[in-house]
Amino acid sequence: MRHPRIHHPAPLFSGSSVQLHDTAANHVARVLRLTAGAPLILFNGEGGEFEAHIETIDKRCVTARVGHHNPRTCEPPLELWLAQGVSRGERMDYTVQKAVELGVSRIIPLFTERCGVQLGGERLEKRVQHWQAVVISACEQSGRNRVPEIAAPRALQTWLAEPSTGLALVLDPEADTKLGALPAPSGPVSLLIGPEGGLTDHEITLAKQAAYTGLRLGPRILRTETAAVAALAALLARWGDFA
Image 1: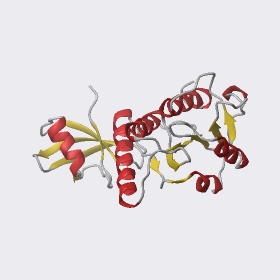
Image 2: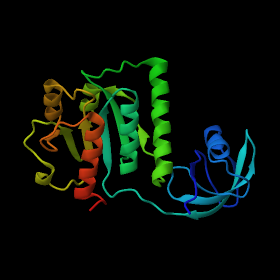
Image 3: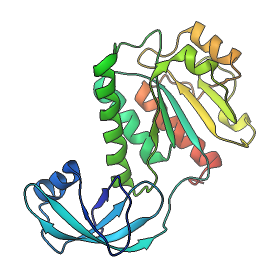
Image 4: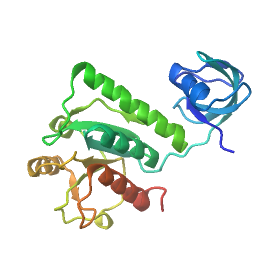
């Protein structure tokens, strides 16, 4: 039987007792309805995971006793960065969730010409915190022990002006290049995808001027959240651990 996996954003040591943070405690006590003695898996994002069991539990506080450390990892051999045009509500949540499940190590939310989401100040800060919670939940579900980064959202032009290494790809339904024609990357792969409505021709041109290679997935036009899942899975099938 698979034990519940809980992210604990603090140092973990075998033999120690830790108090779960409020969100995790609520999930353990109210959603899973676990009791004292129930086994858990704890991880803090620094690598590996710890066997643990619930020591005390009530509606407001849950403590766990930390046991043996397991250095298990399931990170893909291919380092993937997703530069994603911000889409609305649940579509962006879905993209973030599935990208984490598939194995991305970094997600960069981008504001583009066709971005229908206007965020700034406190609203933007809260949205980033929400996306980070989606990331953590996806790590708990998928078995990942490294927590991907949600980078600070920025304008597309700002992102393209930053120095890059490895292979940079931009999804372009008009591109001639398909994945099978690309050489194996020697560093991280950056994948740029537009929001609803895609990137404009001007933005795709800017990306290519910044050394991005236009990539065509196939003859069909995909929704932004479908495009991210399909492209990441294809990259992992070609160069990662899906092969």
